[in-house]
Image 1 (tube, one colour):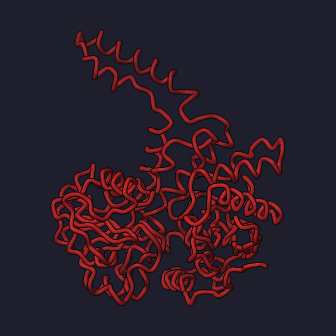
Image 2 (cartoon, rainbow, N blue to C red):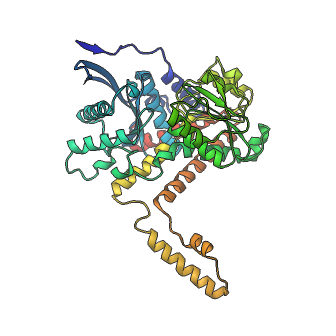
Image 3 (cartoon, helix red, strand yellow):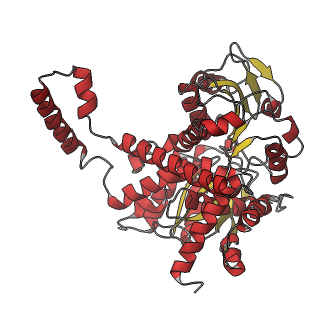
Amino acid sequence: MFKSSKDSEQDTHFFDDVCSYFDKAAEYTKHPAGLLDQIRRCNSIYRFCFPLRTKGGDFEVLDAWRVEHSHHKTPVKGGIRYSLMVNTDEVKALAALMTYKCAVVDVPFGGAKGGIKIDPRKYSESQLENITRRYTSELIKKNLIGPGIDVPAPDYGTGEREMAWIADTYATFNPGQLDANACVTGKPLSQHGIRGRREATGRGVFFGLREAVNISEDMKKLNLSTGMEGKKIVLQGLGNVGYYAGLYCQEAGGVIIAIAEFEGAIYNSKGLDVADVFKHRKSTGSILNYKGAKNIKRSSDALELDCDILIPAALENQITKANAKKIKAKIIGEGANGPVTPEAEKIMLSRGALIIPDLYLNAGGVTVSYFEWLKNLSHVSFGRMGKRYEEVANLNFVNAMEEISNFQLTKGQREILVKGASERELVDSGLEETMMSAYQQIRDIKMHNKKIESLRTAAFISAIDKIAVSYLNLGIFP
């Protein structure tokens, strides 16, 4: 007897929401209607299914997707999601966001996304490996994966382990291909990953928030002090993105007063230790009953707490017209993709909230994925060729300065001045520069046109202009 998952699309409009943001921004551009239509549409949508043998010897049919939104630049890039919420609409929307996200931060990829409709918690490791390898083989059959074609990455429900399986499967089907490791990013270090990739999206969220709160003019409008120090923060999601975003904000002086997960939320007005809460959840299976914290039964109630910054870093459609009026945060940093619906955004903008949009704020992951892709193509770690040379050159300079000035530096001072950059330091530096410059670009667009009411619209304008230029330079629209 064969068992098939229900083939019913959820009544969702995530892709329509993305298109509505796009259309709003497009009104501020002067590109031809046909070109805008090309940018807006998904170029290819591949939906397929494959069987999985269950423990009892039966078969379960799994639904899967890979959507390539735009080929204005290749390869295309986008994560693979394992979730029961995966459907065509969601994957299309996420692929579109990847296109615009890459453009905003000047990463030379088109946008894509993939997913399998499963709850990964209900499968054994060996079953997940079978699922991942079969999914990869289906992509290979259709030429939807490859270093110069389509480069997946981790997303909700997947991680380094799954990316290693994908890389190995691709290499098996393509023996001797020199650049095979560049077929996927987010791999473990042992499988040619890059240092800093695991933390990248959350660290990018922090860099983006830090850039926003350091602009005194904007903070004055929100009646907030400049800088991260003392800011009260509510964090939704303690996965890879939320954990590192919260951790870095905390290290910079922010106070994490509440953390929400699907099992509930916890609150402490004096602050929560993000790393310790993570350890508590790992040992108990829940963030609830954390020492010194108050339990909040409904996870969504935490979003409505009085705070300075709210970081929704879980899934889409978390802030809607149903709860937008109850959101008290002055700054919403979209760590997740699409956590705020268009209706909710209108409500929060009307009361003066600053919304830092997903297509900018969570672009840290794809930025460092780009660095990993470059590393795999060059076949050498960043810093390996030049680190020692740089240290020797710095040491010679320091010795010369000490001799000229007749002043001796301390051991600690010498170590700081002489040290060459490691791969992790170069990755963090590149990510920080990317997030800082991209924020200034989208803020400048908003500031130069008073009719633009949100950073999201400004970010979409930035993306549309860059993608349009790419298409025009390709000669597709002479």
